[in-house]
Length: 287
Image 1: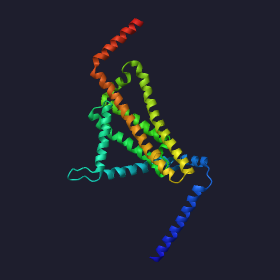
Image 2: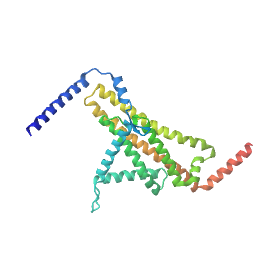
Image 3: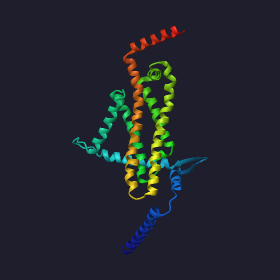
Image 4: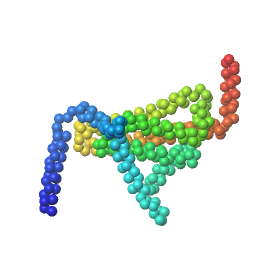
């Protein structure tokens, strides 16, 4: 017992001595901000051999899984155990309120209640995963979005989901209508939309998170005490939450835009027929 206490005391004294040395060096030692920033934004890669193939595992992949696992634990804590008296805990009420908010927002974009309920799980998944991955930088862990592959992957998945759900809600004819309404000449522009939209989603997420990460690295290097922790509440936590909300909101709006266009067409078919006849007459006169 005494030996264990002596060993523990020795370890603690060595730990605090090393901590003091590192702290003083970081606070008062010479700083090469450029070199430290370059080191911070470098992508860490590890290779695993699988037969003749090499698998690349980057720090973004590892941090993403860590963030997702932590978020799942947090959601599980908020859900808690089901109670027999049907009384909701604060965590359960928060999750229900968030779900209803997403449903009502989706309905505001032109979806029915049933359609809104169907897209809510995926929209919430986008929001929670991106929020967790962005906010983890508060603990001085490089966020996955500083690697362009992460926001690009999220954006590609989002636009594929938009296309799949549009097909599911309005069918092949409805999808064609969403591309060609109000006039057929809109087709190339609507197709271009499916390239521009994921680019916009990816670059917005990457730009905001990367800029906030670099800013916080500069602050933590030049003023390592107190200031980074205070500013990190905004640039890491709040800004990360805002980017998650924007990404989810835009994904909802893309689906709702397609569904609303088709619903409007079927609700007022006579107006579209008149418009077609008018366009044909104008074309004949022009010829």
